[in-house]
Image 1: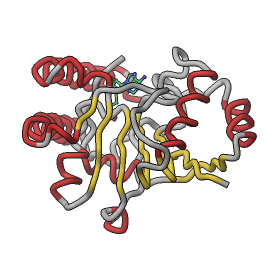
Image 2: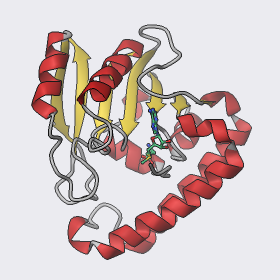
Image 3: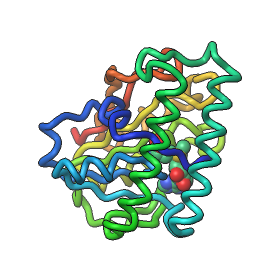
Length: 219
Ligand SMILES: C[S@@+](CC[C@H](N)C(=O)[O-])C[C@H]1O[C@@H](n2cnc3c(N)ncnc32)[C@H](O)[C@@H]1O
């Protein structure tokens, strides 16, 4: 699995965040080497980033982040029909934005180490309702060919345990953006757990046609 470096502005768009959310406590799960927390906390927001990769230390994450940045750019070049550039503008802007995000992450990791925690779904080391909002980008659904129904069910329940609201992006598999094969079964299970799920369009699209987050709320 890749350790990627999406930028603060991508997160704001993917999760439809705004100034109104600065007063909310946020946990970003599977945060990787994203630059979101660095800038969001500079803006006065409260965010804790969680990822099992943090156990390997900043130097190794920097290496992984750089490798995956190159790999991501190569994939975008190899499959031009899978991507649209309205949001980024062009490949150079995307590369620059992601490089800056990785640099901001690495600086923040050193200056604000308490904001980064090594842990993995589906078991998070937080009390019930510890956060107002849990966000997670490009782990759930993205890897639904490797992480199955039971894992996703446990992971969403765990996110909904530690936060009052959960937002997940995207809602399809990586690659060609195929639908999640166990989507209906997962939604039925979450409904039976007393969780209300709905898809919401967001102002972000890179993978063609992939512009929805899943919002999970208690009933
Ligand atoms: C594709 S990256 C996404 C990183 C970041 N959210 C972004 O959008 O750039 C997926 C991340 O999920 C993390 N990950 C893998 N298994 C995980 C788990 N069980 N729980 C939480 N994070 C996990 C990986 O270490 C990796 O950093």
